[in-house]
Image (tube, rainbow, N blue to C red; front, side, top):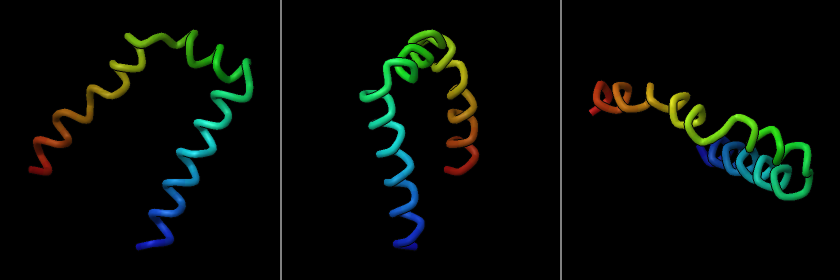
Length: 52
């Protein structure tokens, strides 16, 4: 399990560094927009309800 947690932390860290260091990566995220990003995560609500 600690290996999996490290893998998740590294994945998130790499994405954050890419966002702040590469303007092209930042522009891609901004082009998607907050509305579409929110819609992509809507599935998490019923998934969490099923889990609980």
